[in-house]
Image (cartoon, rainbow, N blue to C red; front, side, top):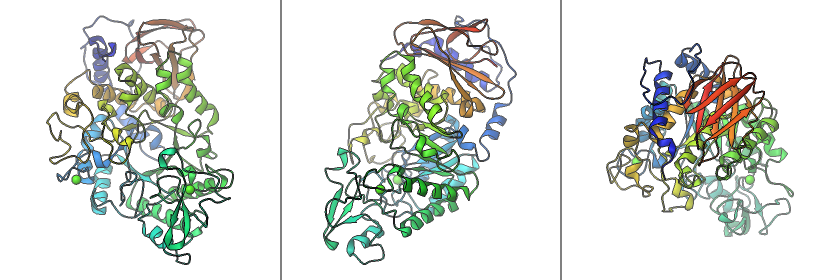
Length: 558
Ligand SMILES: [Ca+2]
Ligand SMILES: [Ca+2]
């Protein structure tokens, strides 16, 4: 389904924006004006501002992060598996899109029973993806381009093929005997939890015949939970963290870290887990400019992950939006859309930074969550880029990549299909061989090559949106103020830094245009349209906004 957002008028507005953001003299707009003459504000050197914002310990607050499934991104040797050399060869493409940092899904050796989230060695590279030398080369090339590299750190469990577990299961007396959670029976009064979800089996306990005991696993049985009550496990995992920091990684995305310790009554972010996270933070703080982001297992609030705002995570995913945005977008109430962001503002400590997603390796492609409605996935991304936080773009969302239908490990593989670089079947620029998993639907319609050539494409939309954020501190760290509009389907809010204020407008209604008034909005100046298409007029302290069906816009008002 195509939406009105593909209209020529919309395209012209976007193109005009890009010209403006690059300070290229242009009067390209020939469509009928939909907005009153804009105010103009002094335009600082945005490239210099971006460099400043992205340098130093707060870089992560202003960066656009891109989640890469290395296996599906770019194959360099024709074996059908993406690899580190392939990824390195695509850094310029990512830079050109507006990406500042990468998050790599697990790159360590793995039997791949859980797509790499079952690690067999914390201090090596999956040979399918290359070598440590290839990884070092990736870091060098990324840093040369002022891009950061974060990697997935999976600490709750290892693979059952990890040497630690092979040793641990061999007897009750070996040096790793207490590195995992063992019980004489398939239960333990001190472990009050089962598997994380039904997907991972009926029992969280699996018999190891060698020692005639059961080990605890919250996920697949091939993923035994580490026993963090063993000081040796704490030391070994913190050492593994240092191993990657010493190589120069800029940070970590920490998988299900709330689940490290179990108790009789609770298994998520219990006090001992928080103590470990503080130790992990201290390790990061002993290196300059490193950051870590938590995969929260509390989908309503990630406040617990931030501690006092300085001693635990730098960032945590706001899944109240990230996992559930399909719900507000299936209705028309602005308040439903705004709530997860207001909650985060009120619950999180000062200094907390949300990480914002609309897609990831764990959930359906945005195309699916949007029920294939283009204006819906675009507005979801628009919210991701304008609400407070650091956006994490899942690879391929900039192409509106369609889901696949083949599961190699489990049905999350539908969102883990190969990147589509060119329009040329059968490898589409991803591989010269046979891809490890088939492409998603209609790859010929969702290639970087094709999207780059189309000014109204999803890729162009992302690129232009990221260009608006670039060098504007208000989006990374500015205050949020939601403006009350007398029309409940209009989303209207401001983002303000010390020097600049932006108004963001969006319609939840996909059928009709809407006009509403924000009484007492007290905008500091007249609006200048920067992105999208809407009409905003100041009238005394009030502001009148008109937005098309499924419309969106960003104005500068100071
Ligand atoms: Ca390969
Ligand atoms: Ca655990």
